[in-house]
Image (cartoon, rainbow over all chains, first blue to last red; front, side):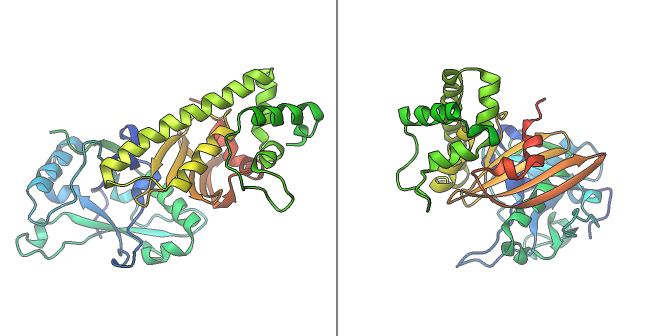
Length: 161
Length: 180
């Protein structure tokens, strides 16, 4: 688990963050399709793995630079995309009111041959019940997405230098 | 909802819609009522609009303006979605969002966004309180609302029809009606 006192950032496409403000739809995980199984977690990046000190803006700049040069081939940020930042303590151990859904921020390096796991900031938000179960009740899923979105403390363009 | 049963109200709403047919044919329910008829009898926002706007023409104008605004907002969202995914929004979802916003023209404008599969979301957020609706097509929505009950933030969610949603979920309407 990523310790409390750290921050994770999620890349939000412009259509999920109109006017630069992330909305609940930005926190919809891949729920699986005919040719792709559902993800185990919601993909995010661990900011402090790249830069421990400094402001959130400086940490996000380090993340932009990582994404631009990553050998893994990160998802490309469109011109209207934004980063949504959530402090880990907002999710680690948090329990969604009423549904009892629990959250954890986990470091999930991708075992890429050209990127040491210790330098890979890729992480995931995991839930219990797990994300493959999110398909069972779409309204509950929306409520969980709303809950995660409510924890965002900072957002800014994904593309500014 | 109760005060829309009066003759004058019905005459107003029906004539207004008859003059501007915006709904697709084939949406009659098992009672033979068209979607328009169901809207006029079930949407609680009409009655409040009449009270606040005073005249039939004003309410009609507001509704038409909201529909035009919704079309503009959805066009902007379509452009963002095209940039993100090179695809179009889900048409049925888009239509439902447009219809819902026109029906509820007295509400403050929501933020419209989309999910990866092209489904349109509408969000009203005021401080810690928020209402999110996902337009699934077929006139149904998922909704999630976070609202203050006393000092506690309370959450609720569920599925509903776009018709009469706010009558069944007054806590959601309360959040949507809060203005900055």
